[in-house]
Image 1: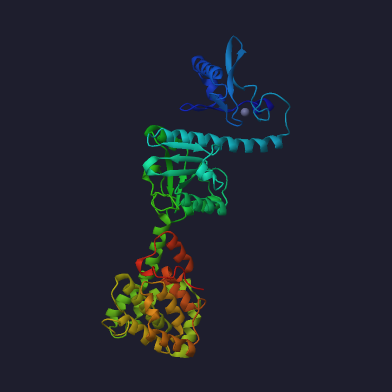
Image 2 (image 1 turned 90 degrees about the horizontal axis):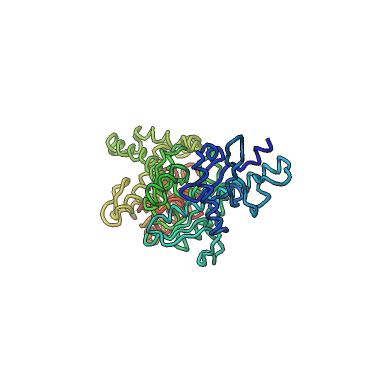
Amino acid sequence: MSDRQRTIRVVDFELPRGAVSIEALMAMPREGWEHLRKEINIRRQIEPDRPFARCRICEGGIFIRAQAVDDSHVPFYAHFPESPTDCPWYEGGNLKPDDARAAQYQGHQESALHRRLCQTIEALAKADPRCVGSAIDTYLRPEIHARGRWPDVFLDMGTFGRFALEIQLSKPFAPEVVARHLHYEREGVRLIWIFRELEDPLPQGFHDVITMQRGNAFVFDDDAEAASIERGTLVLKCYLEDGKGGYLKPRLVSLDDLDTTTGRAVFLEDRRGERLVKYCREVRNRWWQAYQQARTDKPTSPFYSDKFAPAWASVRGHVPELSVWKEDYWATHSEKGQAHLASLFAILCSVAHSAERGEEVLYITQHSGAGALLAMLNSKLSSAAFAPYADLIETFVRTTPVADLLERPSFQKIQGNARSAHPQVDREHPVWKALARLFPEALDGMVRAEMADLGRLPKWATGPEATPSN
Ligand SMILES: [Zn+2]
C-alpha cells in the first residue's frame, strides 16, 4: 500500500504531449519511453530550470528511471533531487500519518491542477495569432496589480479585447465574485470564470458566478482542450441554463462567439434577461387577454365580465390574501374585488402603453385627445374607489417616461386631496402585491433592479426612478 502511494501517478509533459499516467508510461513500447527519457535529459542539460516533465502534485522536475526487472527494464517516474521532499509522491524519507498525507495530497493536487490548467489555457490561447500578450498570475501586471488583483490568466487578444480568466476549482465566495466583476469592468477587461466541471449539486458560489454570467457556465475539460488544439484558439465548453433548473446540451465556443458588449459580464446568450422578460410578459398576458375578451363580452362594463375569472384565479394563486380582501371589499364597498382589480389593471396598462408608444392610449374612461392620460388619472384619483391608490399610481408613473405628469398642478392637487381624505394602500396590501405581480418591471423591486442591471427594462419602465421608492 505505501509503495503504491509513493509512486508518482501522473506527470505533465510539455504541451502538446500533456499528461502521462504511470500506467500509460509502463504500457509504452521501449522506444516510446526511451525517447521521453532522452528529451527530459536533453532539456536538463540545456535549461535545468525548465523541466520537460513535471510531477502533477509538486510540479518538481521528473525523470524516467529504468528499473531492471528480469532481463528487461521497466520505466518509473522519479523526482529530480531538487524537487520538494514534502511531495506526497516523493519516494524518499519517512512515511507520514495517512490523514496528514491525504489532506496534503488534496491541497497539493488542487493547486497543482490549478497551475497546470492556467498554463494549458494560456498556451492554447497564445496559439491564436491575434493573441498579442498573455500572463499567468505570478507575473506582474502593472495596471491590474495597481488594484491588488491578478487574474489567473490574462489575455490581450488585440482588437477583440483583453480578457481575465479566473480558473475556479474551489467554491468562490459571492462578495469576491462581484468585486472582481466590478474591478475588471472598470479596467475594461472582460472577465470569464472557468470551471473544471459542473458538479451536481453545484455549490452556491458557482451559482453566483453563473448568475453574474447571465446563466452561462464555462468549463475547460478534455473536450474543450481537444477543440482548442484543433481550432488553434482557446475553446470553452458553454452550458446555458434551460430555465428549468438544468442546462441545455453544452456547446464548444471560442472567445469570438461570446457577447462582450456589456462591461460586467461575458456570455454566449443572455439566459437570465430573457427569462425575466418572458416571466413579465406571461404573467401580464393572461390579464391582457382577459381584458380583450371582456370588451367583446361586455362592451359597456368590461370589468364586470366573467372573462377575468381565470386571470383572477391565477394572480390569487400567488397572492392568497386577495381572497380575504375580496370578501372585505364586497362587504364594505358593494363592489366586486375582481372588477376593482381589473379596473386598476386597465389604469396601469393605459400608463404603460402610452409610455411605450409615446402617444396616449386609454383602456378605461372615455377621455380622448391630448391630455387624455392625465385627465383619466385625475378623474380616477378623484373618486373614492381609487383615491387610496395615489401612492401606488405615483410610484408606478415615476418608473415610466411619462413621469412628468406627476408635476402637473392639476394632478398634484387631486393627489393631495386623495391622500388627505383616504388612507393609502401600501406595499403590503394584497392589491399592491397583485399589481406588483402583474407589472413587475415597475413595482417588484427585485425584478426591476435585476432587469436594469441586465439592460433589459422595457422602454415603458425606463423612467427617472431607477428603483421603486420605499
Ligand atoms: Zn512531486
